[in-house]
Length: 372
Image (tube, rainbow, N blue to C red):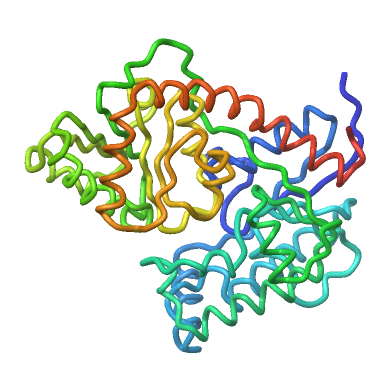
């Protein structure tokens, strides 16, 4: 029997931390593994109903901050008040925040605050996307100032990536001793160990929302250009119900809505290249899922993708977000199937050795609780 070693509050700012769909399963995966280590977890959500969200958005817009109220001053203030009320009488003083939006920006005495994060406001607004431009310049500055105030209350930061750690150090002046890079697990797909045909020309794109921000339109235009040089390339798009009208209009393009389970697993197993040239992807669990299935990845040379691919060792990093650059990368990839095979096999080995929820959780537990 595992002995209980501590009580820890795990909180998320909009959904139940134990729900497997919250933040791509990050909180639930960490909670389960902390409990295996003997940690007693108290999970708390500080989310709002749809009417409250509409009110928050209205206030945000009236203040001239834009439409993305999520993480704005009213959202954070109310989230923190909810959390403070819920933890007031608990026999626990350690709070692991899954994201910074219910961190205190002023007083919250008597508690140690730990933060797991994949982005800061600075890194989120570093690249302009359809989502990031929903806030005004004033709104962006306010978000960043709120981060600065909130970070003063964090005892220790856990970042998915080195690039977020660098942002904390260089932009927010956080002492490196207060930051640990913990990575993440690889998602729900199983690793694929079978034989793969890297000359089949099959490209896979998977994203359930934010099609444009995830690079879907960029990839689609690049794919059409690549077809002029290599008519054998094929593109499968998953998670875009509203793009299914494209089926039949572009050669070798297949678009699915939401699919899961064996059908999705088979698509990853069959793909010779995973392409998601996201304009702003803080981390990208789906990149790890692709590598676990021996599928090299193609994306923009920004955010955490250089880390995940070891600077292009296990994929193709595109410097310019243009259809021509994407097309050139696709054609180059399929001109060298042996290189794709090597990338896929070595990328899988690297991914499975480096990224797991067990390793992530142990790093967190070691810092918070001294559990090796």
